[in-house]
Image (tube, rainbow, N blue to C red; front, side, top):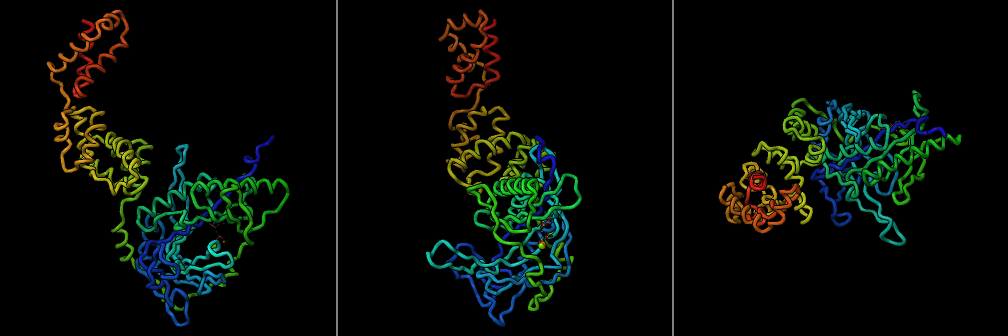
Length: 484
Ligand code: ADP
Ligand code: MG
């Protein structure tokens, strides 16, 4: 049977709504805070009372600029806001203030790395600023829908891609890059479950190689990255099958049901004219000078991509290690701090991804709550590198002791715990003599060719040395003795 996935190709464009972590709302001084009592953070402006006037929020523009600059966008120097009109219970003004014809950022791209090692630049159409709606709550009161306007008027940016994404995998990677980026930039917490980052996917299919896109369907309500991927994969198959069955795809908005793993129709898609966009008369134009742009640029933190490149080229880490260590700004910064104090970059990475992560997981704490500094981890790496203690002793004895007494030095603790490795010949010789004397028959077997028994003698010596015997010297000496 012919494979339908070879006959069709999918086209996907994403729209990502990102809630900005501004202190106040987009066009008013209402506090923007998640989790307050319902309808506590509202005012005449966010409720759209007659005569109440919106104003610009500089912090919001700064955050949007950061994202735009990080994506290499062109910045629009003269932005007019528009009203997007529609009626909905959670939209108290009856319109949303947004940027229609003059988005703050245009063009630009986000880089994704696929599982097979290939990479792609996903082009952006635009990033614009707008305000969010309130929230309708349908499941708290049996007979009524409740409305919480705390979110009404809070700041959003919408990141819109060109229709260039081809698979659910690419879409998932794109969303994950966006989430990583906005977290690095401290502009959004990136929480998809709570809706701080919401992704709508526009999906169409067409015969392979065609230059005319099919009719697109918009899918909403995917509250995790894996759901973005699954919803898109489902929708592509649904559209291919519909095509095969001679059905026409209608332009509509569908919702993803994560439990059933399917998309279902919500409503016919509104077209732009339904919204009656017109210029917002109450806000002066937003003028973004070059000086403003440069001031924002000068305060940008290092981006995940730059750190990844530094970690792989300068520090020689593998793709895997560098990916894990740039997953968040916290871990990347911590790693850099260790790397500032050691040149054994690989050992530093292993320490952070091994014992440190295990400790954090076990105690359910974040790196920010961890008592040891990067410098202290580098000190542990040094003790092992210089042969002062074995790797096992450093991990299993000194590391936990240091967490208990972080004011002490690692070397000091090694001495206190009496675990400083000894390359002292007499000390090791004595232990070897004892170990061999304890197993005369095994010595004979070894001499008769059972070389695997070396491990047994090594174990004996290490045990009686309290982990202090230098393993390299011990094994060398053991062999010499046994083969003499
Ligand atoms: P609308 O006017 O419906 O909002 P836009 O042209 O603004 O549509 O595009 C919205 C999103 O849909 C963008 O991310 C764009 O890349 C994507 N898109 C546009 N056309 C298609 C298509 N035929 N198939 C898939 N995605 C598309
Ligand atoms: Mg549009």
